[in-house]
Image (cartoon, rainbow, N blue to C red; front, top):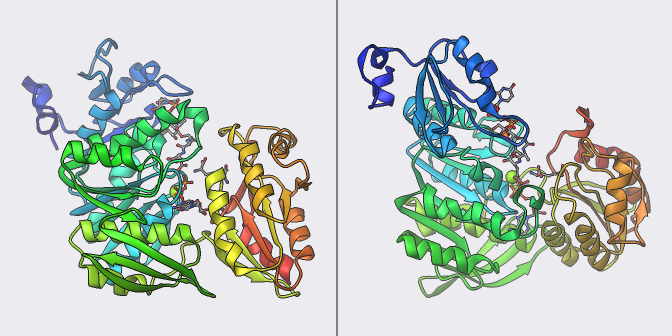
Length: 475
Ligand SMILES: CC(=O)N[C@H]1[C@@H](OP(=O)(O)OP(=O)(O)OC[C@H]2O[C@@H](n3ccc(=O)[nH]c3=O)[C@H](O)[C@@H]2O)O[C@H](CO)[C@@H](O)[C@@H]1O[C@H](C)C(=O)N[C@@H](C)C(=O)N[C@H](CCC(=O)O)C(=O)O
Ligand SMILES: Nc1ncnc2c1ncn2[C@@H]1O[C@H](COP(=O)(O)OP(=O)(O)OP(=O)(O)O)[C@@H](O)[C@H]1O
Ligand SMILES: N[C@H](CCC[C@H](N)C(=O)O)C(=O)O
Ligand SMILES: [Mg+2]
């Protein structure tokens, strides 16, 4: 591709130069690369412009006031957004039908369920998010929920080349505020919920919400659709923005209008839902437990309907969905017969949802093991503990990715919200204690890490998998 096909304003010989790729890290620049120079949390990409040009960058996307010598300066007050638009032109084409999911909790679950529903409808479908890039025959981890813009767009283009026609991706608030998932046409977007998380980054709930709202005000195509979980306290604001923009609205939940949840009855391995569609009640036997999984299933159903799926087909498929890795995953049953579940709950609201999901499945004790991550919102720590102390019978506080922080100090922050909890720093010992304690009829919940395969201590990732450890402790 030549420069003139990307940047119309360039004239003369520069317009005929070949563009070979895009990079936001100067160390990845090769001859012919377009370099994006952005101010970040740790570095200022503008400091690397000269080095990028020396390595062969032919154009630099940067703020207007920045000095660029020896390459084309694509000046924009929002350089990350301008870079996303250009990179998308370079990497296109993408899967024809692309949808995004935002919200504090439920993004991974919803994109994965959407992928499954599309697949059951006969489409070649994929999802991108915390679990990596998932297709019917492959799962490749990317490390972050929304990887950087270059990885994101090249992954999407790669999926198209593999024949994927339908893709659902997670739009995290970090990703949205850094324009990490932009540039390609988004046919529909979904909002799952908003509750406390990531205030270390966003500062206030209002700012955090504003980052998520951009999906609806800026990112979805003007003639696209929005699926909104209607029962959250922030949902009205999302619905107002969707209506103001003239997007097609699909609302789901007890107060939803498109798919209205009338009743929910837990069963041994799932739940029976009564959902009103077009004025008529329909029964659905969902093979997943917990109110939160019913919510995510309905949002996924909304996305499939928003992109042309039939209601009948969606309902038939929902009865056959497979569990999502690390979300209320039944990992083992101990010698006394107590089941142990692994769940990715890592916010106060998520922990509440996970415990509430399991409550109907025991009339005895519920033992919860959890911790809080280092280098993340510290304010959520005591709040998670308060939830656990209020809703569980025994709380064991342990470590969960301390990262650069002192694990004992993190535990102290957590324990402030649950003074009666047991403290066992080592995660394996904490899980072992819970598994040893659980008697017949009890339930163990190991929360916080879900699918994760490592414990991040300092800058090392030590292999650790909650499901494996639970199984070892049950044996
Ligand atoms: C706070 C945050 O979100 N940081 C992310 C962000 O970094 P940044 O833009 O602030 O980058 P920076 O490191 O300060 O560098 C600034 C610029 O200089 C460039 N640079 C830097 C150094 C150098 O030698 N040369 C160079 O060119 C960088 O490539 C960058 O463009 O952009 C980077 C690349 O896109 C990400 O890797 C990085 O994620 C860090 C590692 C991270 O931990 N992010 C977490 C908090 C995160 O984003 N999590 C959410 C999950 C949220 C959820 O689902 O709950 C996610 O979407 O994964
Ligand atoms: N709809 C929901 N309402 C409340 N809690 C939920 C909901 N969906 C999921 N959760 C809780 O959040 C946890 C994480 O779910 P999931 O991975 O789907 O969310 P996510 O938004 O992708 O999270 P992340 O921000 O880490 O990417 C679950 O294990 C569960 O405890
Ligand atoms: N996407 C979330 C996941 C948190 C998972 C938990 N295990 C932790 O490390 O805090 C984050 O990066 O904040
Ligand atoms: Mg996720």
